[in-house]
Structures are given as C-alpha cells and as structure tokens.
Length: 265
Image (cartoon, rainbow, N blue to C red; front, side, top):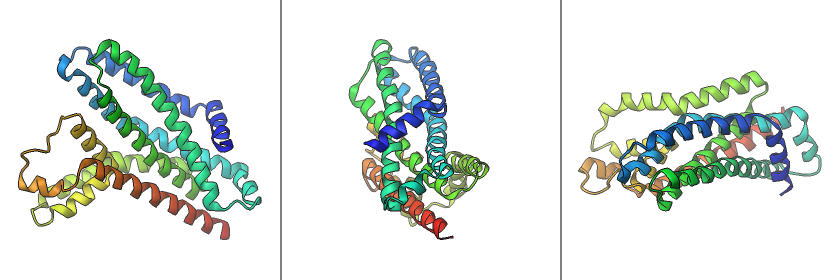
C-alpha cells in the first residue's frame, strides 16, 4: 500500500499522466459528439469501437512513457538501491513497483471512462455489458504496455535511449507488425493457418480488437468458412488471457534478468 501511495504522489505531481489523460479525454469527447449522429441501434457499439481504435494510438505510448520513466527515475535517484540494501530482493521490489504503477495508471484512466459513461447515458443508448467489455480492453491494454514500459526503463541507461526505445516499441506494435502480416497473408493456406493464428493473436492489438468486436456482436463466429474455423480455434476470451499472461510474465521476468545482470556488471 505504501508503494501505491508513493507512486500516486509521484505521478500526480508530474505532468506526464495528466497530459496523457487530457489527450484521451479530448479525443473521447470529440468522438462522443460525432457518435450522436449514428443510428440509435448501432450508435453506442460503433462509438465504443471508434474509441478503442483511437486508444490504440494513444494509450500504448502514454503507458510506455509513464511506466518507463517512473522506474528510470528511481534508477537515477538511486531509490531502488536504497531499498535493496534493506534486503529487498529484485523480484519483490519489481513486483511492488509493478503493482503500484498498474494500480495508479489503470485507476486514473478507468476513472475517466466511468465519468465519460455518464455522458454516454445522456447522448447514446448506453449498454452496461458493452461498456464493461470495452473497459476490459482498456485495462488489458494498459496492463501489457505498462509492463513493457517497466522493462524498457530497466534496460536503458540514459534518457535518450529510453525515449528512442519507447518510440520504436510503440511504432513496432502499432505499425510494423501489421506491415509484416500484410506481407505474410498471401502465403497463408489451410495447412499453415494455425501457425498464422498463433502469430496473429499473439499481437495484443489484434486480440483485443477481435475480443471487442465479437463481444459487441459486430463480428459473428457463426457460419464461418473452414479456413476461418481453423484460424479461430479458441474462444476470443481465451486468446486474450493467453496474450495477457504471456506478455506480462515475459516482460516481468526479462526485467528481473536484465536488472540482475546490470547490478553484477
């Protein structure tokens, strides 16, 4: 609890968290105003999908910067070294830092969406179930990219390295991976589609959008072709859980590994 309070004080005094939240708030309001012209029966779901598409570009880079600079600042101020002298292990320290940054960042962003939900009820046909599905995508998106940001903050030694690594990582997930899939799609066949499925749904941005579209009823899993049935061989929520567990555990363990190597050197 002390770590969470400490993280909240640090983030609330800085500008990064509030700048990121302000941009998300502005884009959400603009999209809500536009959604008022949508047909009533599809307006709310279309708005949530548009909001998710906008989040893809904004939320990952804000999460990366906020979490990476948070852990990097502790390295600069030698706060982590002081804590380690109190017989706090690297794993325990990083776990507490992870819980703290995840709690603060997710709490602030989810809090805004609950405020936005009040406006949704005024202007759109609000559906609680659809809104909860949307919140799940926001939380998972923040969980993964916050953890990735903590990893980047651990492995970089200067602020310029950190900024470069953060921008490259954002560009990789948002643009480069999709460009690679576009090149690979023509070679997909019935024999190798399951391998393609693993690679495709291992990308959290693909899985989150697929989960949201199916949960909102915008993508039907009925009457699919044999090729699509072989590609979508698990329920969307299972793909989502695998993605979440894989990326969270991978970057947490890599952070500990690189942190330990850095201390030995």
